[in-house]
Structure formats: structure tokens, C-alpha cells
Image 1 (cartoon, rainbow, N blue to C red):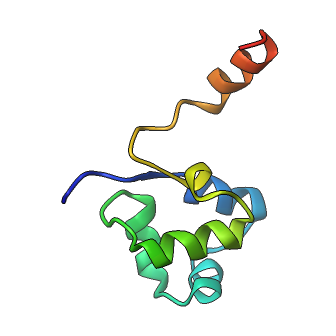
Image 2 (cartoon, helix red, strand yellow):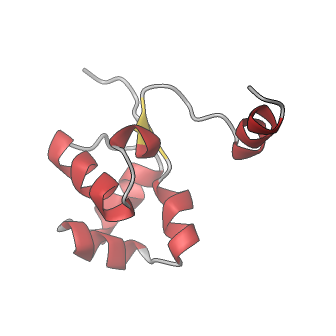
Length: 83
């Protein structure tokens, strides 16, 4: 199973002004693991995916996806037009 898992970790960290090290410490991994995840070089275990989702206080499917996430601008435009 080498299917790519997409994520919003970098964006979520930026919103919180949180470093890779701080996030790594919060979920119990090495800070390099966060970089690998953000670049799509590593797929998280289920446990790590759930820890990250809990950390960001979001459902796991808002942090990770098997499909690329659409740009936020496209999602906002869709919401504004009743989609």
C-alpha cells in the first residue's frame, strides 16, 4: 500500500504559528517526521493521524485525504455561491 496521503499539516501549523518541533513534541514524534509528512514523503500511521487531528481539534478527514485538497479559495467560492 503506497498510495499517497495528502494533508493540510503545514497550513494548520501556519494558522497556529506553530513550529515543526512544537507540533512534533505535542504528538510524540521527531520534528523531521512532521517535515516528511508535510512534503508527502511519509504516510502517517493511523495512531499518528488521529493524534494530529486531535491536536488541531479537527476531524481526521479535514487533516488527511486520499485525494488532493482543493484550494481553499475554490472551497470558499463554492460556499458563497450556495454549493
